Image 1 (cartoon, rainbow, N blue to C red):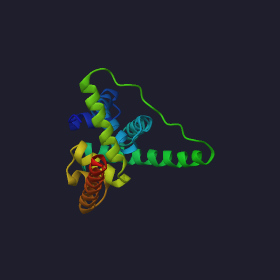
Image 2 (cartoon, rainbow, N blue to C red):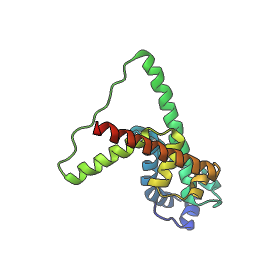
Image 3 (cartoon, one colour):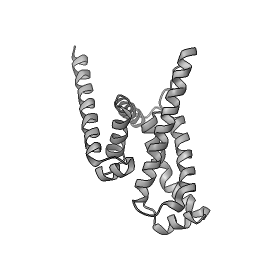
Image 4 (cartoon, rainbow, N blue to C red):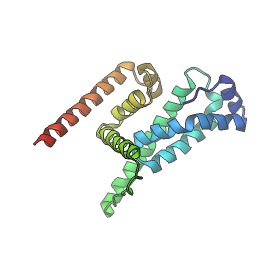
Length: 188
């Protein structure tokens, strides 16, 4: 996320549309990325991104600079994405009682090797994150993908810093255990 000056944030909190547009342009990419990593769905990530910016617009006047703007937006993003994901899980469980769920497939990637390599890496990351529980996945995204410090994650999720450390440790152990099983399976 691009660094925003306090003046832009203050102007946006006073209703300046141009200042809010600068905030949106600076933050929308990382908001979508974090939401996608939490929800593992493009549709849900788009919904979460819209939800986040509505909340930011409505609550910017209450921001108060007690934490960094980035941490404040992360907190809103993670909470919105978790709420949307939970809502989707409830909807899916209701549908499973009555219908078979169709599996969405994507078309073949473009012909360039770089895009194929990037897509393979993205699928691997998505797969590994998908095997973690929601709390572990959220911590891993914020730490390893978004580069937040333990303290920033603690503030964003409103949990103790030791809880962040524990979640990250367990997430890393789960990924290592899974990858070890894959290596053994592939060698057999």
